[in-house]
Image (tube, rainbow, N blue to C red; front, side, top):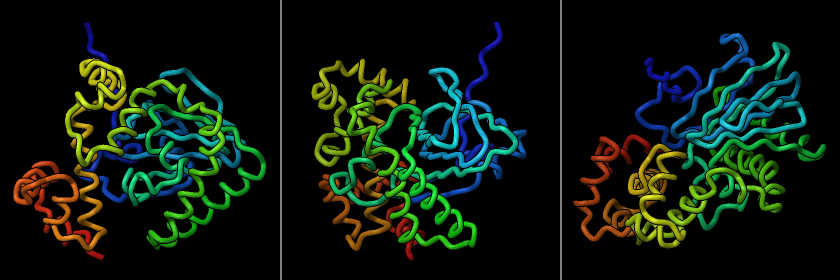
Length: 290
């Protein structure tokens, strides 16, 4: 019996995953990526990148594990990291695709807007039907980001507010209505929210399973199903993400970062960081120095 072909996992479609997606932001037109592939992008996922897509002209079809959905210019689509999705577009399609990593929004979880948290914890592809005014404002955000990006400028202080506003425009009503709670994979949504709240002090999957009313075995099953990671790996990923963020963007010493993340021994923290990222904290800081 022939083995099933695994669903490819890309950085951007057709590009292999880089070693690291830290602090990543990218925007391009739908045409740029889709036309060379015959306006059809097969089922795939992105390990570390979240994507937001909006069509301004033409039409498309989103294919995922729930089936096929038609996407029109009055809609926006959000694909969370790890979610499988594929696209077909009509040749006259225009619009934008924004890709960004979890850490790009910056800041601590408790300081993020509710819509940003909803986006970062989403566990399945989401389709939003926009009202006229929200559609106009979202189009403005995407056009501004695309123009800035296309001119070769990478001004984080411009992209981040526009990206944040775009997420608020598409997520706020859905979050208010409680629809995110009913998406498949909500157990993973809850798990990630708990990890964001407690990762500095709680590293055991047993703690999170108890908080969610699950067995540790079932929590691991959810994590493998929706994130292709064990619960312990997901917790460790969150700790290392915060370590990267603090090392790259704060004035804390490496020892202070270690203590902030709950490590009693900075040397042990440095060994863990090197094992997970492939480089020492000081080298990582030097490489990301502005």
